[in-house]
Length: 138
Image: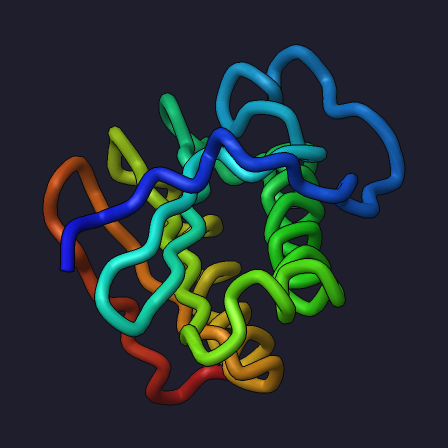
Protein backbone atom coordinates (compact mmCIF):
# COMPACT_ATOMS: atom_id res chain seq x y z
CA UNK A 1 0.00 0.00 0.00
CA UNK A 2 1.32 3.44 -0.92
CA UNK A 3 1.53 6.23 1.70
CA UNK A 4 -1.41 8.60 1.53
CA UNK A 5 -1.03 12.26 2.33
CA UNK A 6 -3.75 13.20 4.79
CA UNK A 7 -2.45 16.70 5.52
CA UNK A 8 -4.96 18.28 3.15
CA UNK A 9 -7.84 17.20 5.36
CA UNK A 10 -9.33 19.51 7.95
CA UNK A 11 -8.53 18.56 11.53
CA UNK A 12 -10.51 19.66 14.54
CA UNK A 13 -8.60 22.10 16.75
CA UNK A 14 -6.17 20.60 19.24
CA UNK A 15 -6.61 21.58 22.89
CA UNK A 16 -3.66 23.57 24.23
CA UNK A 17 -3.15 26.26 26.83
CA UNK A 18 -2.18 28.95 24.33
CA UNK A 19 0.33 29.87 21.67
CA UNK A 20 4.00 28.95 22.03
CA UNK A 21 6.83 31.40 22.16
CA UNK A 22 8.83 32.27 19.08
CA UNK A 23 11.75 30.17 20.38
CA UNK A 24 9.63 27.08 20.84
CA UNK A 25 7.77 27.65 17.59
CA UNK A 26 11.13 27.79 15.78
CA UNK A 27 11.97 24.38 17.24
CA UNK A 28 8.69 22.49 17.26
CA UNK A 29 6.30 24.61 15.24
CA UNK A 30 2.80 25.56 16.24
CA UNK A 31 1.79 23.50 19.27
CA UNK A 32 -1.81 23.67 18.03
CA UNK A 33 -1.12 21.69 14.84
CA UNK A 34 -0.10 18.25 13.66
CA UNK A 35 3.17 18.69 11.73
CA UNK A 36 2.74 15.81 9.27
CA UNK A 37 0.56 12.74 9.01
CA UNK A 38 0.12 9.84 6.63
CA UNK A 39 -1.22 6.31 6.46
CA UNK A 40 0.83 3.27 5.57
CA UNK A 41 -0.42 -0.29 5.73
CA UNK A 42 -2.33 -0.68 9.02
CA UNK A 43 -0.99 2.48 10.68
CA UNK A 44 -1.67 6.18 10.75
CA UNK A 45 1.54 8.09 11.48
CA UNK A 46 1.54 11.51 13.11
CA UNK A 47 4.95 13.15 12.92
CA UNK A 48 6.19 15.76 15.39
CA UNK A 49 9.13 17.63 13.89
CA UNK A 50 11.85 19.13 16.11
CA UNK A 51 13.85 21.49 13.89
CA UNK A 52 17.03 22.48 15.66
CA UNK A 53 18.79 21.73 18.90
CA UNK A 54 16.41 20.83 21.71
CA UNK A 55 18.36 22.25 24.64
CA UNK A 56 16.46 20.75 27.56
CA UNK A 57 15.34 24.10 29.00
CA UNK A 58 12.07 24.09 30.98
CA UNK A 59 10.38 26.11 28.20
CA UNK A 60 11.34 23.59 25.54
CA UNK A 61 10.34 20.65 27.71
CA UNK A 62 6.92 22.18 28.44
CA UNK A 63 6.29 23.04 24.80
CA UNK A 64 7.24 19.51 23.72
CA UNK A 65 4.95 17.97 26.35
CA UNK A 66 2.12 20.33 25.38
CA UNK A 67 2.47 19.38 21.74
CA UNK A 68 2.64 15.66 22.55
CA UNK A 69 -0.48 15.99 24.70
CA UNK A 70 -2.21 17.69 21.78
CA UNK A 71 -1.32 14.74 19.56
CA UNK A 72 -2.83 12.31 22.10
CA UNK A 73 -5.96 14.44 22.41
CA UNK A 74 -6.28 14.52 18.62
CA UNK A 75 -5.82 10.75 18.34
CA UNK A 76 -8.55 10.20 20.93
CA UNK A 77 -10.99 12.64 19.36
CA UNK A 78 -14.24 11.27 17.95
CA UNK A 79 -13.29 12.64 14.52
CA UNK A 80 -9.97 10.78 14.46
CA UNK A 81 -11.51 7.54 15.73
CA UNK A 82 -14.14 7.67 13.00
CA UNK A 83 -11.77 8.73 10.22
CA UNK A 84 -9.07 6.15 11.02
CA UNK A 85 -11.09 3.32 12.54
CA UNK A 86 -9.09 0.10 12.52
CA UNK A 87 -5.72 1.81 12.06
CA UNK A 88 -3.05 1.86 14.75
CA UNK A 89 -1.84 5.34 15.73
CA UNK A 90 1.93 5.89 15.77
CA UNK A 91 3.53 9.18 16.83
CA UNK A 92 7.04 9.74 15.49
CA UNK A 93 9.15 12.45 17.13
CA UNK A 94 11.80 13.53 14.58
CA UNK A 95 14.99 15.40 15.37
CA UNK A 96 17.47 16.96 12.98
CA UNK A 97 20.09 17.21 15.77
CA UNK A 98 20.83 15.02 18.77
CA UNK A 99 18.73 16.52 21.60
CA UNK A 100 20.01 17.38 25.07
CA UNK A 101 20.08 14.50 27.56
CA UNK A 102 17.17 16.07 29.50
CA UNK A 103 14.97 15.81 26.41
CA UNK A 104 15.88 12.13 26.01
CA UNK A 105 15.09 11.52 29.69
CA UNK A 106 11.76 13.29 29.27
CA UNK A 107 10.89 11.20 26.22
CA UNK A 108 11.77 8.03 28.13
CA UNK A 109 9.11 8.98 30.67
CA UNK A 110 6.61 9.62 27.85
CA UNK A 111 6.78 6.06 26.50
CA UNK A 112 4.48 4.56 29.18
CA UNK A 113 2.18 7.60 28.90
CA UNK A 114 1.63 6.86 25.19
CA UNK A 115 1.40 3.10 25.80
CA UNK A 116 -1.36 3.76 28.33
CA UNK A 117 -3.36 5.44 25.54
CA UNK A 118 -2.64 2.64 23.07
CA UNK A 119 -0.38 4.81 20.91
CA UNK A 120 3.09 3.74 19.78
CA UNK A 121 5.80 6.36 20.29
CA UNK A 122 8.84 6.26 18.01
CA UNK A 123 11.90 8.47 17.66
CA UNK A 124 13.90 9.42 14.60
CA UNK A 125 17.19 11.31 14.15
CA UNK A 126 17.39 12.59 10.59
CA UNK A 127 16.47 9.46 8.61
CA UNK A 128 17.28 6.82 11.24
CA UNK A 129 14.92 5.48 13.87
CA UNK A 130 16.45 5.12 17.33
CA UNK A 131 15.29 3.60 20.58
CA UNK A 132 15.41 4.98 24.07
CA UNK A 133 15.82 2.25 26.64
CA UNK A 134 13.09 2.20 29.22
CA UNK A 135 14.94 -0.04 31.67
CA UNK A 136 15.29 1.47 35.14
CA UNK A 137 12.87 4.28 34.28
CA UNK A 138 11.41 6.05 37.28
